[in-house]
Picture 1 (tube, rainbow, N blue to C red):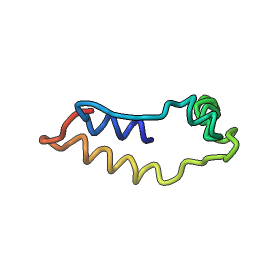
Picture 2 (picture 1 turned 30 degrees about the vertical axis):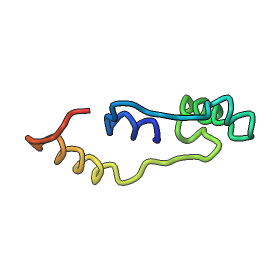
Picture 3 (picture 1 turned 90 degrees about the horizontal axis):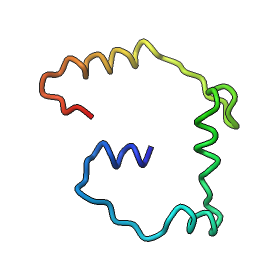
Length: 72
């Protein structure tokens, strides 16, 4: 989600100090998250279940109809 937010906000540049391996060495290894994303939602360590799909679709549909939207 954070990486998505970075790209969606379109900054000219991102500055950072620590790398993913620096974080992993400190005990904040997020490699498992990328492996979890490859799993079906119900098969993840924390099972995930989609709800309110129609309501969500209505929101995306309203967005798609906006003439002044910025495409991502």
